[in-house]
Each structure stands twice: as structure tokens, then as C-alpha cells.
Length: 483
Image (tube, rainbow, N blue to C red; front, side):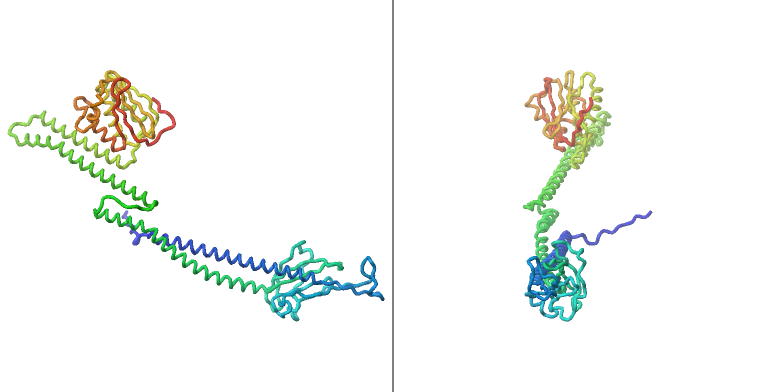
């Protein structure tokens, strides 16, 4: 099956463009929502104001209603104390019209009408010679204490908003319906005029916001541009670190990059040192082998095997160092002490049957170290302790201050305090005279340093030597490990 090559993107996505489009979209959406909300608030305000004015006109109409009584008896002026004269008839007239002059102007845009119980109407002059083309709703359609808002048609066919009120006038047996309203087109015109002004204002505001946003994006990305320039200078070899003060959001990235640069520099220096050490360690065996090859005397097999074994040990040692350095540099190694140490103790117990190896306090815990390197370190310490112990060697570990403290105790002669520092230096290997794992304390210290660990030599409670190792903690189980 042929491989399919997916072409890379021709142009990378710009962070500035992404910020610009995201902020622009939010600004446009916010302004649109603001326009809709403000327009709705304005229209609601105009309607509420119109309703308040119409209610005032209805109150005015109600106060202007006059009930007139005309009797059928001979003397209409005589009335009793209990009411009107017997057989009298009542009629309703408007004592005065509302004060607004638009009610008196034909087609003025404001209209009132009164529906009397006998079916007749009283209406404003603004209706001119046109009667309202609608009737009042049934009394059941009214709510006590509230005016009824309806949509009707005016004398010229324009839409009207009418507010109607059902009132009981003293002197009448049946209620009267009052109505007052206005041209709804004026409401639409006011809303349209406000909408145009609002749109212009929001457009100017949007332009200012977009300009401010563009400046903010440019200023906000200046630190990244400075970082890009610094990285370019770093790539050209002008400096070794990223120097300068950056904002709080960018400084952690700069710090991490500097740590990566420091780690790479240390890794390169360590690789160069190891290469030099390997070359120096192989120089003598190679010189011996070269002299043997150029000499006239036959080469002794024992000497040849000894030099080859010496070369092999140096190669294995430096390969181990290189592997440990790479593993520590990755920082993803995890090792469980309770899983690795018991088998190591059983192996050393087989090699040293005269010594009793015991496992002390040991919670289930993980350390940030490669399993092979951990076995090399602890194995070397146990091997050294077994070589010098009289009868017993103990291993244990505990958690303290976010680290794992691992102790190897023996009852041997120990190391004098003045000699402990030199015992950990390169070139002083305690296992050169005794069989062991092939690693000296200096190599143990070097391996621990790769993982951020530490070796401390102190006196053992058994009158011997205690080798205490501090290892970075990777995780701890909640239950103790079994022995």
C-alpha cells in the first residue's frame, strides 16, 4: 500500500490574527446584543410613557363626564330627598374636553371615545366625520382596576394603540366604556429614529474598540516578539541564555527554556567529559597492546586477556554512565523500592552466606530513578557493606520531607570521618581490592547526582558504617509493603 504524504499547512496560523478575530467577533457580538437590548428598552420606555399619558387622558375623560337628568313630569324642578324625580331620564354629556389640542385637530394622532350604555358614542374631533370602526369588548373582558390595551385602526387606516377603561358613573345603571389612544406609527418612527442614532453611536464605539483592541494585541505580543529575537540570537550563538525581564505570563516559559538550555549544556559537558575519560582509560591498554603487537617477543595470553578485560570494563562503565545520564535527563523514570530491593537482597544473600541481610522499615514507595540505576547504586552499597561486615547488613527506607531516605548499615570497621569525603571522590574506589558490582562510591555519587539524589556516610547504630541515600520521591502507596 503506497504511503500517502499529507502536505503541511502553507501558512501557520498567526496568534495575532487569532486574537484579532476572536476579539473582533466578541466586540461585534457585544455591540449587536447592546443594540438589540437598548432598542428594546427604548421601545418599552416609549410604550410605558404612552400608556401613562393615555391613562391620564382617561382620568381626564372620567372627570369631565356629566350626567344630566330630564323628567317627564310637569314640574321637573321638584325632586325628593331620596333621589331624582320619578320618571326622570338620565343622559351623559362631556362637560369639557381633554386639554391636549391634538384631540381637537382632525387626524391629529390622538383620539378618545366614550361608549354609553344606550349604544351611542361620544368621540373627539380628531375622528372628524369617521366613526370608530370597532366596538368595546364585553365587560367580562376587563380586569378590575386595570386598563385594557388593544390594537385598533384609526380614521385614515393607521394603526392605533387604544387603552380602554370600564367605569361605573354615578346616576347610571350600566357602566360606561372610556377609550383613549394614539397613532402607533409615531411609536415606530420614534423607535426607528432612535435605532439610527444608536446604530451610528455603536458603529463609532465599535471602531474605537477595534482600534484599541488592535493596539492592545500588538502591545501584548511585544514580549513574544522579544522572545523570538532572543531565541534567534541564541541560535546564532550570540548568548547562551535567554536574558531580560518578561511579563509574568511569559517568564515561566523563559525559565523553562533556560532550564532546558542548562540541562542540554550539562548533558553535552557530561558527554564530553565521559568521552575524554573513556579515551584516557583506553589509552594505556591500547598502548600496551600496540607495544605487544610491534614487539618481537610472543604475546603472553594472560597479559592480553587482562588488558582486554580492562578495556571491556571501561567501555561497560562509560556505557552505563551514558545510559544513566540519558535516563535521568528524560525525567520519566519510576522505580518501586518494595518491588526491587527484596530480590536484590536474596541475590546478595546467596553471594555472601556468612552475612545476615535483613530488611527493616520499608513503606511501599516509588522513587524517580531508573530501575537499573537504582539496583546498581543500592547493589554497590550492599556489596561494599557485605565485603566489610562481620556478621550482618541491614537495609531500610522511610519518607522524610518529600524524599526517600534509604539506609544501608553494617557492623564492619566503618570508615573514619576524615576519610569519608575522599572515599566518594573519583579515583578512590573501595571495591578495587574486593569483588563486587564494579562501581565505586564515586560512581554511586555520580549516578545519584544525575537524579538529584545524595549520598551521606555516617556511623551505623551497629558500630559500623551507614550509607544514607536521599532519593527524589515519585509516589507513595497507602499500604505498607510486605516483607
